[in-house]
Length: 231
Image (tube, rainbow, N blue to C red; front, side):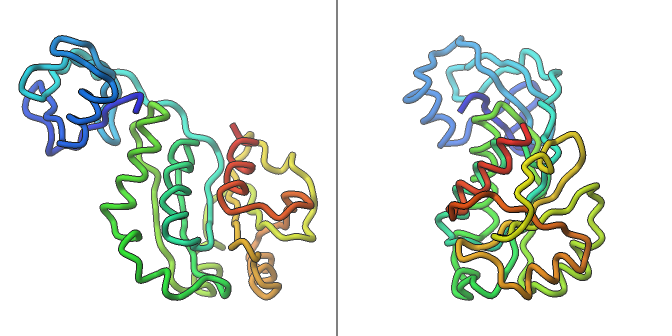
């Protein structure tokens, strides 16, 4: 991690108390010693620096640096395998997306929704991991949507983005649509792709088609392709 992020309940006056995982990371990975200066940040707040103390806490020196700007791409993602989802969420936080919508679709196994890996603490930690690597502090907005049609018709259609795109095999192969000069949201299906009915429903509700290329990409690579192009 390139920054230690602390929740409100870890703050004690002018200090942050390290969690057990942070203590282990500071001493075994960073190999920091008492008195060393560390980069710190408050979750959903500002970044700065602090001094490591001998009681596994960090004395706040400064906490006034704004977090880096997010990219102008948000993601709608058909729920992948839960282990893959954790990696995807971490990567999206690392890239700097503002919102992540996890969606059910026909080719998503219903059993995926029962996985403990979807529980809030697991997803929260995945988001934090991505932020700490990036040197960011602001959590993306992560939402789960169990029902496809109501999400597209009642929610996605009202999202305030200048461009709305859905990835389909026969869509326009125009990567310039992904340039982050305008706010964009991209819907990415499962590795088998959205059904024609699903892409048509997106299109009927304001989404244009985009083709990510001739090769079939894994979910993680599709996300990386979209986000990297928008950096």
